[in-house]
Image (cartoon, rainbow, N blue to C red; front, side):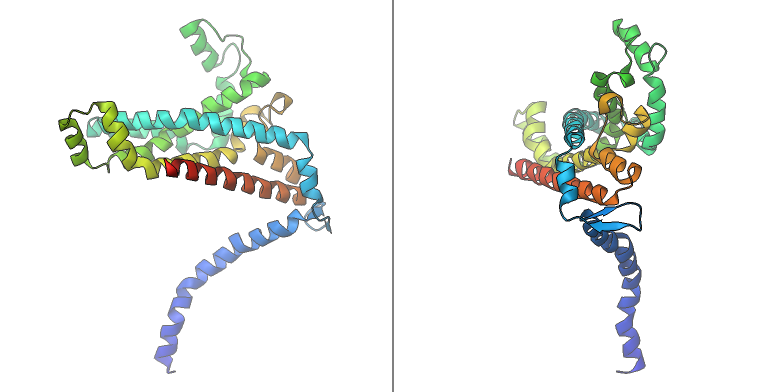
Length: 292
């Protein structure tokens, strides 16, 4: 093999090397290390003792884990059921508007997503302040209720507060996906359906919805995954996880065990259980929605 041939053979590896190095450092090594950690008990980064399945047995026997799963599942279900119809409704409204108005409202509705969850948590911790908070003031002005409600110190109101904040952040974000899908709907089919006498609902249900279905499945699955990974928002909004751990999520439970307690092995076990939950829920969603 001459010098030119060797250079040509080495060229692809030169382009692949950065990807291989980055993947090995930031994916393969953490992945393998997480498997190893899940079967060890640690006391800091340099102390590890093999304990087999004890970490998993501890987590599955801890009532706080099931509370975290319950809180996270409630948040995920309610957020998705409220958030996605709102996002789709806004996308339908903006899809029929004038271009300049549509772009302006798209920017306004999308902009909350550009703000980090920590900042949003701190902002809404002020908004939900009793008596003088903006949210309670608004409720008092509109319906005469809410002035003395302590949203963030009442266990029954912590989850509604989290859902309200998440709606503010993510409705506009998901709206962009739906709007992009709506703009790719075949208008000839829509016009043909209208000529045949179909009303708006029939056009949407039989023409528009089937064409945006792949995007809708993607949004549902990604929103669910994001909901199960919730951590920064409740931690910053509540200054922890709220009264009686009403805002404790699975990732929050992982953080408490792995970093506050210092046992990275238990944290790794929680992480793998979370991965299993997300994989199972996502697979069920794809199977159910994909067969309709």
